[in-house]
Length: 494
Image (cartoon, rainbow, N blue to C red):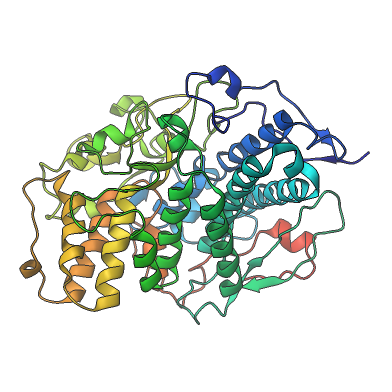
């Protein structure tokens, strides 16, 4: 009898409708595999498979660490300290090969997640939905589709040309939408970037329709499980990457009020935290945290060796940190911006060590030491506000008053000394520049920097000994994994 879908040894998140106090139910006994005949035969097995989808996404090679890390170290705000290929020195230096650890590991884990989602959706359509009932089945399938959409979006950011290059006409990635349960199903040509984005948006639209509005009073589940506002928030990111600014506005308006203080009026009551530092400390479940990857001290339920955000960004214990000091902050990067004032609360995420020639700065946004149980942010409400602000300026081509108010909302909660007015910006371009710079400060260490550069086809600046990469340069995007090229005869390289 065929076997399908591996399970994580630890269930990672709350089951649909369960309260946060029932955490014993979040850790079912480990299972290695189940048969085709029984995988969807009980509600418990179906629920375990849903949980395993989140588990595969929060693997250290994907959203548990490395995907986020690469999005920062490929940009200009970090300096490599260890020259270790295993921990991304080649990503930082812009010289990845087809067989690089980053290139192979991220590709493999993202497609593992996608296939897990496909197998789950296939099984639900083949009979699991009858077992779960219409409401739960719709919720669970919607969760799988959101995870699949986020995985495909993530692949496009590293392995395909930005949408702006040819309006999505360039080669994307293989668009696999049915589950692979055995060998002989690897051959599939690349879809275009536009075709992959179309599927991503279809999945997110389906997810918006099928996901619950909230998980009740459980702040844990509202942060770590996909709900309706998660799908909407991710659509603002996707549309921004496509430069479809009108659609960013349409989506963001669903969960952002027209005036300050900006909040989500329906679904989970998302809002900015008054103190930004509260977002990155236990319990990590503020209303600003739309979607995060939770970590615990249970074996197998944290990112694993050389995958953790704190391991990469925090200095060593000798220098007052909890990490391995893999990447320091570039002294010529955003921390040198005179507009980032000394009294800005986000300066608390920057730590200095040494003096004189040995002086270095570090990102300590993830301070918890081994086994590194800080939650990994996927998307926060502040991003939705800044996505909306940028989209409004670009779409209206004006110094838009609401965009200024949205920018102020993010800046003022950390830096009360800075308040912008429409007169602060001589042109729409100046306002856009301020919004992009605010993103650099706000999301330092959260993996968004290189996406912001590449979606606009901007040059990735030089840093340290690493050269700049113009949009037309070889290496602006990664090569395709050598494993995929070996297994898929229809695959082409970048």
